[in-house]
Image (cartoon, rainbow, N blue to C red):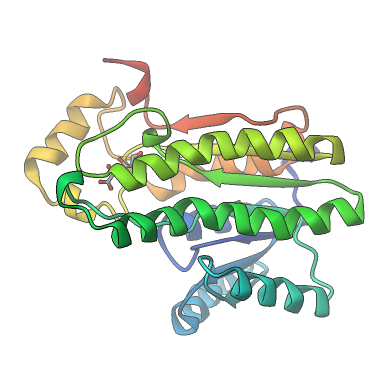
Length: 255
Ligand code: GCO
C-alpha cells in the first residue's frame, strides 16, 4: 500500500455497519490501517461484526445509538470525548428503504426515511465536524448516496428525495468545512446485493432488468465499495471536495 492510501493512526466511524455495505466499507477502511468503530442499533449484532473483524486481525470497536435522535448522537459523541476517541473519518451510511407509491404514502413513513437517510447525516456531520475543526487537523466525511441521488425510480420517493439531498448536503459540508481541512464527498452505489435490495434481487423481472441495464452485467457486491471509500478517506483525495462518485457498474453512464 502506498502512503497516499494509508489510514494508519486514523479512527473511522461508519454508521449502519453491523452488516451490508457499511460493514464491507468498515472492513476496507480497517484493512487500509484505520481503527474502525462499527455502529448500529443492536449491540448483539455489533458484537458479532466486531468479532469477525478482530478475528481477521483488524482493529474494531462498536457504538450503539440512534442516528435519528440528536440526543442519542450527542451522548455517543460525549462518550467518544470521554474515551479520548477522535473521529478522523466519518462515513454516513445508515439508511433504510420504504417502497410505496406516493399516493398511498403516509407522512409518518416519508418522515422516517428522511430522518434516517438524510437528517442523520446532518446531525452526525455536525458533531464530527465541530470536533475536527476544534482539533485543527482536518478530517474526512463520506456520505452514502445512491443512483437516486441523480435519477428517480417509481415507488421510492422518500428515499430518492433523501439521497438527492445527500448530494447537496455533501456540497454544503464542503462549502463550510473545506477551510478547516475537511473533505466531504459522497459515494453513489448502484444496485448492490444486500439485505435491503434482496426483495428486488428475488424478483426475476427486476433482477433481469438490473443485469441487462448495467454495462457490468451484474449486481454490485458490498466489497465493490471498499476502494472508493478508502480513496475518499485517505490523503489521496485531499483536494477532492463536494463530489459524488457513482460506483454502479456504469449504469448511470448509459441509457
Ligand atoms: C430500492 C432502490 C435502491 C436504489 C439503490 C441503487 O428499491 O431499494 O431502488 O436500492 O435503487 O440505492 O442506487
